[in-house]
Length: 491
Ligand code: UDP
Picture 1 (cartoon, rainbow, N blue to C red):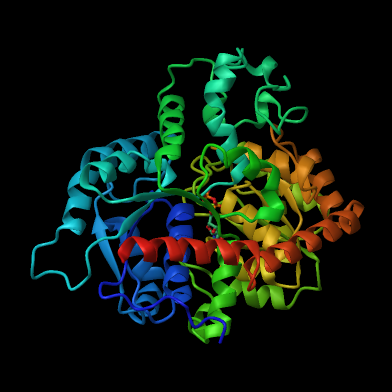
Picture 2 (cartoon, rainbow, N blue to C red; picture 1 turned 135 degrees about the horizontal axis):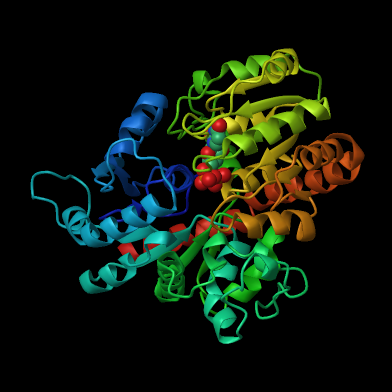
C-alpha cells in the first residue's frame, strides 16, 4: 500500500530518543509522535527510546493498554527516569518549574546512559538523534556537547510559540511588563501577525508579568529562544490552520515540521495499516495518566444528536470552589445536557454540595473523573466543548469539528482561546470571567444561538485537518520529510 515505506533498511537503523516534559499533554502528544514515526517508517526498523518519568510510567501501565500496544513494536522501548517530585505531587506552575530545574540537572546523566549503555544491556543501534520537548530545550546544548543532533518538539500551538518567541521584542518595545489588571485590555503592537487583536490578557500567562525578573518568564524566554539552534522544530499543528504564524516562525526556525493533528494522523495510519489498538480501548491509542471512565460513552449513546456540552479543563487546571459553583449553576441554567470531567484533586476547596445542582446533574448530566476524550469528541451526541484551551484539547476539538467555549487557565491557553474566537472563528472566548450568567449565555450561543455559524466553520476546519494528514497533505509530507531527515542522519 501507500504506506509501504520507500526508506531502505540501513545496516544500522535510526534510533531516536524521545524526551517529553513529564505532564499529560506532553507525554500524550510525544507518544503519539513515537507511534507515528514507527508506523510511518514501515517495517524498516526505526527504533525509539521513550523517556518516561517513573510516576507517569506506572500510571500509563495501570490505566492504558500502552504496554501491550508498544510491545507489538519490538523496536520501541520505554526508559524510566526520575522527575524529582514527591509521589503524586499535583502539577502546578511551581512544581513544573521545580521539575524542569531537576531535569536540567539530571538530563546529562540520563542521556549519557541511553547514548552509551553498558555493553550487554542494549540491543538497540547507536542513537541517531534526540527529539526533546520544547520546555526542555537545554538538551540542545547537551546534544551539541556529545555530537547528537537534537530536534525540538513544542507541544503547543504555533500562535502560542510565536507569542513566546516575541517576548524579547515585547520587552524592547516597552509593551512588557504589564502595569497590573487595568492594563490587560491594552492592544499589543510588536508581535508581527497578531497586531490589532492580541491584548495583554491574551498573552501566555507566563508572559503577563509585572516584574521582568519573574523566574518562569525568564525560563520560558530562554528555552524558546534556544529553539532556533535545534536541528528542526516539530509542531502539532497543520499548515492551513496556522499558516500566518508559521510564516513568521520559519525565518527563525527554517527546518519546521508541522505534523498535526497528531491524533488524527496516527488514527488514519492505524486504520490503513490495520494496526488499530484493541477494541476495549475504543480502537484508539490511549495515553491517559488517569483511569478513563468509559461508562460516559454509553451515557452519550442515549442522548440525542448534538445535544450534549462536553466540559473538561485538562490535567492541570485547579478550580476555586466558587468557580466550580458558577460553572455548575451556569450549565444548569442553560438547560443543556452536559458531560463533565471532574479530575480528582481539581477542586481542593469545593463548596458544600448543592442538592439542586445534584438533582440537575442526575436529570441531564454525567460526571466522570477522566474521559476517553478523543472518543467523546467524535461522538455524535456532542454539540460543543467547554474547554480550558489546552493545545491538545483545542486541536482535538478542531479535528473533530466541535465548536468551543474557552475558559483558559494557564500557559499559552489565553492565546489559543483568542485565536479560537478571533482568527479561526470556531468558538467563543470567556477568559477573565467566571460568572454563571455569562456561562449560561455562552453555552446557549454555542448550542443554539450561534450554532449554525460555528458548526459550519468547525466542519470546514475538520475537513482541512483530515486533508493535512491524508496522503500528500501538508502534515503527511512533513512527517515524510522528518523521517527522511532522520534516515539520512543514520546512514
Ligand atoms: N484528556 C483525556 N481525558 C480527559 C481530559 C483530557 O483524555 O478527561 C486528554 C486530552 O484528550 C488531551 C490531554 O488530556 O490530549 C490534555 O492536554 P491539553 O493540552 O488539552 O491540556 P493540559 O492537560 O496539558 O492542560
